Image (cartoon, rainbow, N blue to C red; front, top):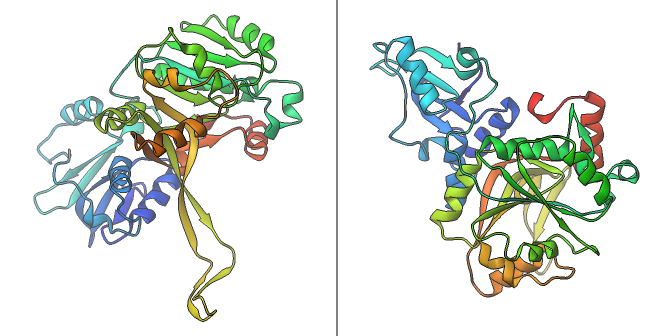
Length: 353
């Protein structure tokens, strides 16, 4: 009945994050001695990370008091409508004694793998597709990176569709290497989006081509590398960006990195402080997706310039730079050759994993 979608209240946020990644879900039922204790969402974990709470924090310490659940008196149509209105992955039916009578799952009721984004917005999206795809050689000797197939579509088509699902229709594509091939392919897709090209005469790094947007964009905009896919409600990233008055927001993946050895920590004189057997560290990894405010375009030189240069400059000036955390499973880096070859050999898309 519960489809393994539960977590103990004494478990840690890291435990919950790993379980969500393993299940490819973003909502878990929290149990305390087999009784219903609450719901834990990926958003709850993200807010905790943003607040600098350690991932070793117990789940019970971050549970929200206001959650949406059903009672035994609610009929099926009422529950179904509530799940649709609030895009709920699951809805438990809970008695006054905190017993779970039934759990309804989105995939069973609506026959979709997961809910579509609830909030829509139509902001410009810039896709950085001018690189040589060095990490993907020899594949990119033939095809430019954005046209590498992932399932029955190219990488860039997956990116288009994910942003379009959120309401975005205005795309700018920065091109240089094999630009003619990229333009020819995209122009023959007959897509319903507005596509514009930022043509780099010479390689301009990961941000230099954004200077070409001068006079073209005057509102908040997204930037995405052309070899990544992010499975996240983008409106939540946008809300975080705006609520914190950021000038740039970096989307960071919480990557768990196991060390396959015992580690030691020593004092200055070489005396042992502690030992850990095969520890695991969790770090925030730059995914290659950002939100920027339009005034930053004027601060980007029209030459070879990396987005990390822009971020470093803003940090030195103590300006608004934020990081929105997502789970490692929510980020796919197709620019990594092993990952890309894995998708090619399986002949499926990330949405089908």
